[in-house]
Image (cartoon, rainbow, N blue to C red):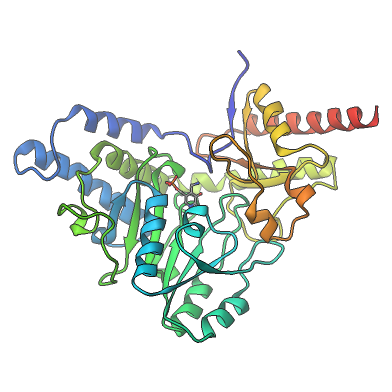
Length: 372
Ligand code: PMP
């Protein structure tokens, strides 16, 4: 069996050993975190310990962290909650679908590098209308481009808008300071930073109004009813703690990512790297291989034991056209040939060398086939 190389950490990162240990311990313990006996109190301790770790990752007080079943839930909660409370939703064209599909929203354009047009945001907010919720993601999942969230929040404040930031891809990869972002709501997801799938968090500003996500129980300060998923939450906490401690180490991925792009562009100078002119996450590269669709590339890489993804996340195994690359003005033909390579906490230089060799070989093979 050939070696397998996993370069799809923006889709789901590898489970960190610390998270695995914490989850196994929690699974072996009996008890509901709401019970008053010693079993219940032990489960409660695991949940509160995890809350502290996630709060530390975001630079906030633990009481502001509400656990959810992932970031899709957190994003849906904020957007639909604010829309129902009468706010208009103003967002960007490059958000995750869990924001875009949650409510009818005004979508502010981005430039060719994928950066939010702040003048257009200001103009939108200046229009007469109900108070707004502005939702801008911190880092794009397809390109890694970092958005000017603090600047967007300052503009939003001037019009009395609330601010939501989907920080799913930033958290654990670069320092996250929720107060510096000046956001009222921030969404996080455990599995993007080495925790388990199906658990995330919404961070809320003290005193901000938002109807509960689920009702029928007093859990999570009455904001999200239902027995806590203690093992998943414990895994999230352990992963958050490890990710925070490993931020400097994560930064080393910039060298690997830049070498990856450098070798490819040196060999084929016409290669398009999306968002290369903007500040990006250190672990993400979105590149087009002219003449070969993303789907064909994914299959070829998979045969070579390398897991990457199409520029657009694919759901139910189908690759859709990327709304992100379209919003950046990419030619449809070019966007259709874009793949995303995303490095993670356990990526090695050997993985990157193997990927680059495979990418160059595939392109050469394709060029030879086309020429024949
Ligand atoms: N926002 C962004 C930017 C994401 O990349 C993702 C995951 N693809 C989500 C939200 C949804 O997170 P979850 O998988 O926890 O529902």
